[in-house]
Every structure is written in structure tokens, then in C-alpha cells.
Amino acid sequence: MKKLLFLLDTDPLPNTFDIVVAYDAGVDHVTPLAGVTPANVGKLVEGVVFTRPPASKKFSALFVTGSNMADGEALLKAVRRQFFGNFRVSVMLDSNGSNTTAAAAIAQLARDLPLAGKRAVILAGTGPVGQRAAVMLAREGAEVVLASRAIDRANAACRAMNERFKTSLTPAATPDAAAVSACLTGAQIVMTTGAAGIELLPQDLWANHPTLEAVLDSNATPPLGVAGIEMQDRGTVRHGKRCYGALGFGGLKLALQRHCVMQLFERNDLILDAPEVLAEAVALLGSTAPRDDA
Ligand SMILES: NC(=O)c1ccc[n+]([C@@H]2O[C@H](COP(=O)([O-])OP(=O)(O)OC[C@H]3O[C@@H](n4cnc5c(N)ncnc54)[C@H](OP(=O)(O)O)[C@@H]3O)[C@@H](O)[C@H]2O)c1
Image (cartoon, rainbow, N blue to C red; front, side, top):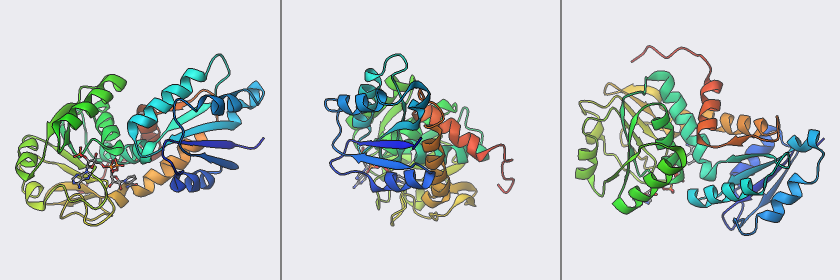
């Protein structure tokens, strides 16, 4: 039976990245559907859940994507509302690579550094990657501050994540370098998840910081989000801190996305969102011992 993946994209054009990764993962056919909303997804879900017999339903699956996290979450909710009994298929949510990118970064970090009890600051945490990274750090036991240039956006993102994942993210406003510096007081971890090509953390704010232990950046488009690290850094120690650049965990992100996509075809009732994708990332990294080069 052919493995069919339906890409439900909340954007007006389908995400080509997710299509390529799905084929590379081993899916037989990918159907990209753009402009999908909670209002128009009903028939799309019906066509997938009613067609194949119970034992073969697992060969159809759904992948929710798009550039807006809230839209993706609303769509996933609407999809799940359509399921009943065994009339369901597996679904993964990964708007803008949010879950796979965040999970790759946090799993890599967790392998190198205990996270429980650490104070972590996510700069520009209001985007899809930042929101999911904040949730994953919190679930690993860190005390997480999600920062934005505007406090109302930080508030909204924290409220949404805390409600969805029962976390206790704290919002903060970091409109300028002075506010970023103040926000980093007592922090052990800082991660920048800003839009591509925006420097958010100048080197002088982290290099000599007295408590920071790890610095992560998800932006792979120069200038990087963190000045003074390299995008290939993967736990590279700079100024006594472990540094992680976007390409440093980009390989794991891709492998993780391919792995998660194929997991969808193992059963017909899997829901892959932040906690599940993080668990898959940790499992993929395996029990490899932490590096001892700190
Ligand atoms: N390494 C990988 O494999 C991988 C995969 C996917 C994405 N990425 C990268 O991860 C990063 C985050 O992705 P995303 O989709 O979550 O980001 P996004 O939604 O495009 O942006 C995240 C946040 O950046 C802030 N921002 C936007 N323009 C800004 C500006 N001019 N100055 C300062 N801050 C600005 C905004 O926060 P506020 O307005 O609230 O301040 C925004 O919510 C991007 O750089 C993306 O390219 C990497």
C-alpha cells in the first residue's frame, strides 16, 4: 500500500522544504495543499480517514505546516475534531520547522548540559521556533523567559504556550541592548530565535557574562542572531560557553523531520507536537555520552 502524506499548509503557497523532506524520508506520494484553514479542512480530513480499511489507515497521514504557529495549532485542533473512533490518521505539526528545529537544538543541548533548574532566555521567542524551544526547555526543567521587542507579543506567546502545554513561561520585553542585558541577569542559557538575518545578541553581552553556560542561535542567514559564534558550532566552547549555531543542529533537524514523518506511517493515531518531537530527537541522538571538552 502506498504511503500518502497530505501537507496541510496554512500559507497561500505550499512549503517546498517540507515536500522535499517528506520524499527524502521515503513517502511514496506527497500532496501539498495550501491555504488550509479550520473552516475548509473538514472535507480534506474526511477524504483521508474514510478511504482505507482499518488495517491500512496508517498508510495515509497528515502534516500541518505554514509560517504562523497559531494558525497551525488551530488547524491541528480542527483536524483532531474531525476524528472519531478508528476514523483517524496520524498527524504531525511542524509550522515553519518549529518543532523539529527547536527539538534538534534542545536535544543537542540537553545531551551536553543538564537543563533542570537552569534559567533560559529565548530572545525573539514569539515566532514558531522560539515558542516551541521555550516549551521544550521548560519541559526539561528549565525556568524559561520568552522575550520579544514588545511585551504584548511576549505575553500572547507565553499565554498560548502555557495554556497548550501547561508550562510556566515568563514574558519579557527586550526592545534594546540594555533590556537584553538586564534580561540575561542570572541566566545560564540564551537562545536567539529571531527572523533570518537579524543580530539580536552582540558579542559583548554574552562573551564575558558571569553566569551564561550555553548560547544557541537558530538563524542561519548572516548576520547571525548571536555575534561571535559560527553557524556550524555544535557545543563548541567559546569564551567558556558552549555555542550552537543553526547548522550545528541543522543536520539533526533534517534527520529528525525525516524520522518523524516516517513514524506517522507506523500507526494511525499518532499526534506529533512539541513533547513528542522532542522525545524523538532525544531518542535519535541516543545514549551517546556527553562530550567532555567543556
Ligand atoms: N536551523 C534550522 O534548521 C532552521 C529551521 C527553521 C527556521 N530556522 C530559523 O529560525 C529562526 C526563527 O524562525 P521563526 O520562523 O520562528 O522566525 P520568525 O517568526 O520569522 O521571527 C521570529 C521573531 O523574530 C522577531 N523579529 C522579526 N523581525 C525582527 C527585526 N527586524 N528585529 C528584531 N527582531 C525581529 C519577531 O519577534 P518580536 O516582534 O516579538 O520581537 C519574530 O516573532 C529564523 O531565523 C529561521 O530562519 C532555522
